[in-house]
Image (tube, rainbow, N blue to C red):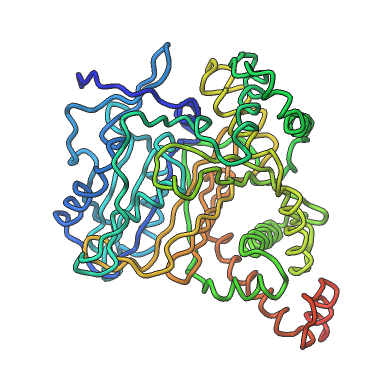
Length: 486
């Protein structure tokens, strides 16, 4: 691999590259279930023609004492990144989950670009495609655009998926280099704050006029730094501990998106509120099933927040921040729990947490790796899970001539976080998946089984409520309706 063509890697992407550790590999994994069988040759042509339009995927990350960069792989061969797989036994969902679980704990080859596709030609009457891409290449919003660019709106490929614009020779992948509306100046301040936290000056504060203009933002960011520094360690549950190498993945049957929207309208809540409340209920039920106490329990999750302008969704790289969301597992009433999640989410709206976290990541990528490790360990203690919700396409799509029945993905967990929850909507349905450490949560399928019943409890509460409504019913009304027969 003698290529000398190199491109500077952004400090944020560098931070994600450095986060790799045997117990938590920084890979985004995904599965596409296809109703018909796909041939190896057809998928290979699709990847060659469309996936490789993104030049970044012909490059591998290179870390040096002077910093990280993207190096062109002069010996690139797609055969090293596309593999044909035959599942054992019945080749059903259980076997596919076991295969993806094994891949989740297996690192990609650092001598090559860090991505790989696996084609399972025979799966449940059709085929399945498993993809792994290192997080340093892109975040979930960008990768959804990448995957959409591989698809067609019809089986014959007459209507191709979105084509990415040609790359600009002067394009800057630094997440903090692009202004994002009123957050632009705040992001520069956040980067300086992050650098201070890791004891490395970044030197972005040169304009006194801007400093005065951002005084209010600076105060708000300072308050967020104090809140972050004084945030107590998250509740001790079986989900917390020292993760190992082995992982487990599971996913639920899709549920109708229209049902989730109807619940949200009934309670004046967002779709995200409804989904995260159902996740909290599933976690509560799982802990109860294992004999754990849940009264008064709150569990903190890291929730990604997109900071990328919609028109830049196609660009690779990582442009998102994180917020710490408290999930009220101690609340038994599903409607009361939904309102509590909504209140917690609303308290984070307008927060500088996402901007601050992105600034900290940028500063970590620019600073010494040892300090990044220390800060990551500190932040990971404050959360138990990573939870992400990515909106996907709402029309049926085709990949290499086969219709996509469903799709799912799993996010990595940083530090010692041992569980990740992923939610993806596609073609009028919502898919719910979990990746967990085998030692901390060896049976994520039991957690997955609780998601749909939690949604159904909210549907039942809605149907049993007094009609007509002049305003969304409160939790007490719903509790009376749910338990009137007891």
